[in-house]
Amino acid sequence: MQITTGRPSAVAVSPRGLVLTTATVLALGLLVAPRVYHNYDVVDCFLTWARASAGRRPWAIYLTDFKTNCDYPPVVPYLLTLVEAARRALHASETGALAIILVKLPNLLAYLTAVPLCALGLRRPFGDAAARHAALLAALSLPLFVNAAAWGQFDALLAVLVMAAVVALLHARPVTAGALIGVALGTKLLAIVAVPALAVWTWKRFGAGRLAGAALGGLAVIALLSAPYLVAGAGGRMLQAYVGAVDYYPVRTAEAYNGWYLLDRFDIAVRGVPAPEARLDSRPLVGAVTFREAGVAAFAAYLLMLLVGLARRPTPAALVSAAALSFFGFFMLPTQVHQRYLVPAAALLGLTAAGSTRRLALWMGVSLTAALNQALDLTRAVLDTAVRADPVAAATVSVPGYRGPIRLAACVVAVFNIALFVWATRDYWREVVAARARAE
Image (cartoon, rainbow, N blue to C red; front, side, top):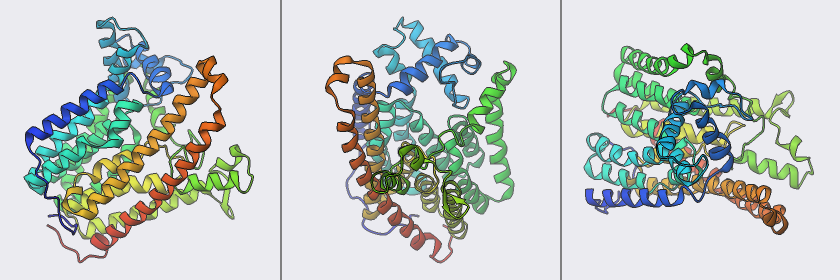
């Protein structure tokens, strides 16, 4: 069923090996969780918001005014409420090691859920051996580990929900896929990036009627997730988590290491443009066209190319590739993109990576850059926090001394991301868009 070429992996993966690998990753994640974390996200935001719920009222997270108000969709306040309930039951301190582990646990568990999802869910469409290989790659996913265990963000959960929606479609269950996308959209708006590819594939494989059923399933889930907030009068704040996502950071890149990042560094270091001005995406690029508008247009054109190819060749592997490249394109082309938004692309590429040496190499490359993009910016954030909070660190650590090497490394990662993006796009064009239309 796969559209890739090249010699597939011949390494046998046993169920016992998968269990041992998953258990090892879980243990390592629990070891890392309280020691490395993004202080602003985990302590200043998530744990602070969680306490407002008192472990019982998720809507209170929206209704309470904080220094930084909750700007996440409804699933996150539900999870934070459970975290706070567990923290109180265990009599853990508000910002101690156990509290930090608890706030990371939903994403760490979601990340490891990808292992049985692949091992069992991909068996029928791709075969038992390919399914086990995909499960092993999911367990060894460095960007998912960094996101869930180290940073403490919700992109790992989002990625696994999208993976589950893809698997549901491969099992001819579009309504289930729609419901899973509804949960994903209730977690982060970023999930919308996968919707066009999943919708086109559903339409071509199952028809407009089942596509409508999938859409209704997704809308029903979103309605159910939103209902308690609406009843409690928190609907406006919840809606702001969606409509306020655009222009929240009106910059060419929010530390996503892509072409915009390289252009930022060039404008600042070579042209001498002040950093606050250089980073703005509202500046004109050509005539009256701004960087923001150019980025949106580039992504729209790229997405159209992916969808045309998928409509002509709606195979299982083409669905995986189109969904993954939708996220990759979103990471590379529009402005205002965050450093973590390559994680879903890396996770999705792993579903079919073991089918060929070329696909495996692409997965390894994207996984490495997605992990480094997070790790480098997390290192900067950890050092920034240490300098602000520790007088000794403030007196001994040079901020330019560590930011300079991080920026240099980030430029190298950006170059590799551009190369990987060109590689992945070329392969998709050759194997899907330019290939003779055929459905499997």
